[in-house]
Length: 297
Image (cartoon, rainbow, N blue to C red; front, side, top):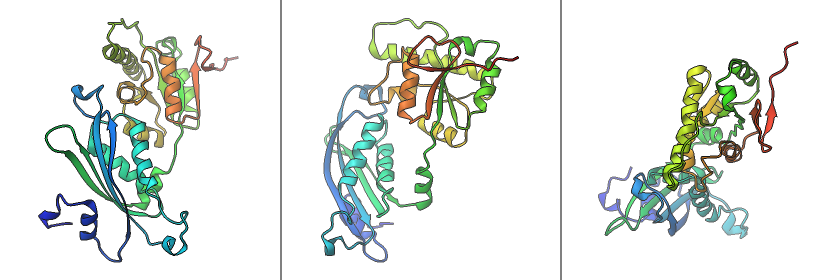
């Protein structure tokens, strides 16, 4: 822990040196990396871009790259900028704290990474810079868990299945699938358009979420999930889940259309690397492969 208050606003390199313990580590830094980003928790911050400044110092384990002059031996600063770019492209975020955490976590996945300082600042929110700074240390157990990729099976349930007498039979069949199952649904009733882009998008998504909760009420096996954290837990624990799409869709960098439930289902399958995407029952859409209940002889 750094106790000297004069270090609080010093460069990350100085802070890294001051807090070092044991054998010195090599450091890789990216300074004043500027990006124009849509980020923020307030409604007034949606639809506008803000300038962010990234400063990152990464401490790495010792290597002989300097002696061999071999670029393949060192951890390149490109790994830092790639981590920033990937996290910015993944989804729209509300908090700088979340962005810093995800950038740090991605950087620390590299086997040579030991400790990373990440500072992110908004440069246009006032007369000065507003920002956050975090320090994270590599945790091999956590990285091992993060490296386990669980691929769900995504299934579209049309209204005649959700409201039908054979719902339990459909869910019994889906429970037999040897993979976590994510159910996608459509609005029970047509959602009127208001002619305003964001309100219309949100209303369409809320129509889908009403059906999701209706399905959960009909069968307790169907658990409504709406965030990436909930989805990650559900997939790892083989939970049958129903997707409430508002949060993830509205935070997507390239938003899919909320008035196309099947297109939304296919988008989810691609975004979350699903094993496959199926439709149940009589779905008249060539984009989906269909499954049917087995006939009882």
